[in-house]
Image (tube, rainbow, N blue to C red; front, side, top):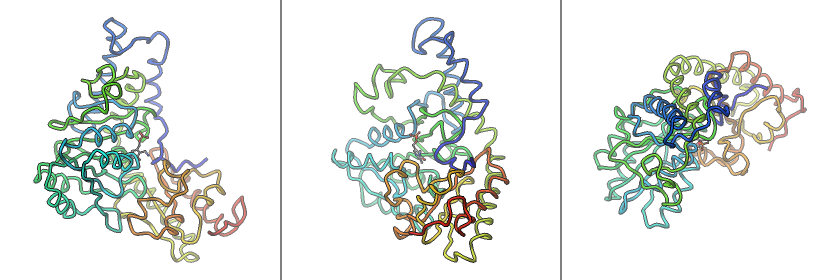
Length: 388
Ligand code: PMP
């Protein structure tokens, strides 16, 4: 299996697994919130991990709120973070976990605005300026650091500067960016940031919302996120020690390796595009790369006009890639991200996303391009590819 779906989920780094295993053994029993020696031991491990998460984004440990993943972190930021009399402004290419909060915010009477993006998926800071001026109220702005479908990196520092001029709070979903990009919250002027373990070679089922003062979201309900009052009442529930430890190590490895990873993985991404172009470009002149060319190191999104991307992937069982966001692939809807970039629905359906990562090799990249090309020319294991 050639695994080119790192944007959907990254494999667990062996060092992460090694650090987690002792905390899954029976002798490691102990609730990290309990007042006895076993509990304190677990609490120490959790706090060490919290410090690693904070260090990755230039925050303080006390600003890190562990969650079940970025979906929960985004929901806490948006549903709990919009100022009481204020509005919410997000970009059109945000992850579904944010867009899904918008109807509820509208229902609660908050004005909601969605910022358009250009043909590469980038938000223009001038557009944010216009929206904040016309809103004329306190606002929470949320723009992702890098897009999970096309890899476009947003001008976060400029957007944060615009938000600051209007006294607005700014949050960023940094799930995809942190593995290969340095993001320092104070330097960027960010108040909130979401991250997820399984996009960083850490475990599934854990993530974090990092909140810097004065940003302090209100938990969804006393019986819900606040629960037993853990994590300063921001998000209750017993913390999963092994998952926290795993996320902490994953963040430390990201800090140590992201520069080298970014350089190597971006080289492989460009190699994949070159190979696809060499093999298919003559026959399929409409073959196109989506998003900004200087986007996320591990992301290559291509449109192969005339194909049905979902069918193509089913024809290539030895290749793990994606038609877009994994969260959407079951729905059969064209990607809202590609539509926001201006692609017609037919082209959005004809687009494939390759997610390259730390373990990806040049041989895999060449083999993936060859498999796809062979399938498209009728020499693939499943015979000629059907066009839609
Ligand atoms: N935001 C982005 C940009 C993502 O790519 C994802 C995962 N597809 C999420 C949020 C949700 O993360 P999690 O799986 O941790 O809930």
